[in-house]
Length: 253
Image (cartoon, rainbow, N blue to C red):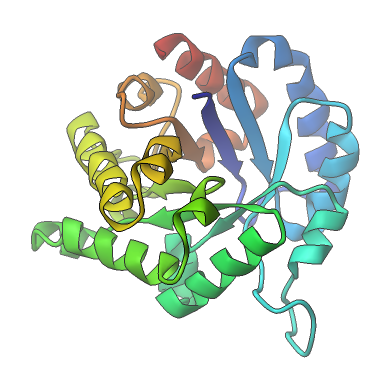
């Protein structure tokens, strides 16, 4: 099972900066063999990224989408708009969407359904806050988020799903989870799929770790048999830093 390393640029990079980044990172492609590399720029830079990555093995993803096909949804983006730009993946349920934008499990579930129906591969984000962790509620929170997001789906619907474990307390703080914490969460997620769906869905699932991941610690996560990649924030914004992270991940497996 190939690693999947995704760059979540969040609200960073203009079109010109995107073209520059994509043009340079293509020069490292031979060093990425065996790793599925994914760039998720802001909506405004998707077209620029698509053009700059054309003919490349590097994939394109989006940071969010709406579940409706069209309509009076000011500021939203539909699945068809993403597909027109050859977007293959979409991040859904990121903690910043949940905690800053008020996104709930019902909205996440609707987005997951629409993504899968349209052939987009969702990267479903789950993870606990620092307070929830201190209260010993990590397992409860992750199971609730998974149940809320995936209710009503059949096992065969989920073979193209990726789940990213992103503890909220580690995102952008410089404080990554320990390998033991990541392994425990990843095993919890896979066992959830095995119990609620079937062995096929569980075995085919790729699980990423995200949260202050960088070249210096990526090996401790992807070196785990339970983790198959990373969702990378700040460390993905500079070409050499991101390339080094990918190469470090490749060497660790």
